[in-house]
Length: 327
Image (cartoon, rainbow, N blue to C red; front, side, top):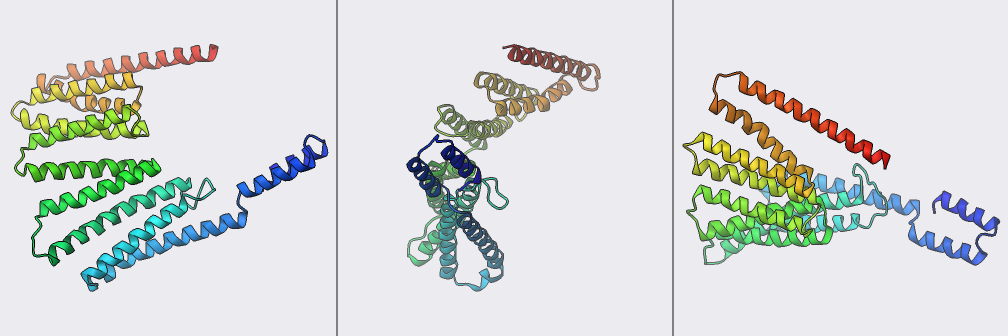
């Protein structure tokens, strides 16, 4: 038990603030609530040992991998995946707020679950290849990718709903893109590049909508994945549709960046503002160069306007802080 709590209890008992029975009940409660220091140390040693075992296994694999049979490789991957899941589940039970080099036990479990997702994907790949080798029916490569991506997405979805951690959010996002992209490639094998851009924009919009409705979290990560994917998809789409018109391409990219800045204000999300601002920083000089090449005044005016906007923003922020302090 924490010495501060024990000292407080003794002080309360001496001053008749609590009775003997209440004192014993609180002692029993605190002892059951907080594990002993030895128990904490034992758990920490076990977890650190598990991490070393994992590191040793990952370091040994490249040396022995080529000498193993295909079934032995699959078995080793299954054992590794089960071990990772067990270690991640074990680390979730920690009472401590920090473990080894990690800030919290949740971070440890999140990292281990992320590695287990990669390992699980490898198991799925090997399993599909074995089925393809041992059966008379030949499974196409596109269909194999579809099967693997489906199982990885299901596993990632399960982990995210169970943990709600950042790494599981990222794993779910990219596995979903991988799966839906595999479905699209399987159904439309000769799809045009601009359709790929439209696909990424659609995924980004849907992800942003789910984040807005608080289905996904944390919000900053959901909006970051959403807006960055929309940006990449927009660049692909615009580049393919207006490849012969640089000016029109730049204008559309600037409009998209302005839309991001507006959305960041409406949603009060800085990460969207940063992506929109980055788009403006990149594309406004391109627009000026495209309209007025070899002319120093446009970029100079842009620089001065930027300085004025920064000054106004700092001034408004100082007013807001003064109002907050006065309240």
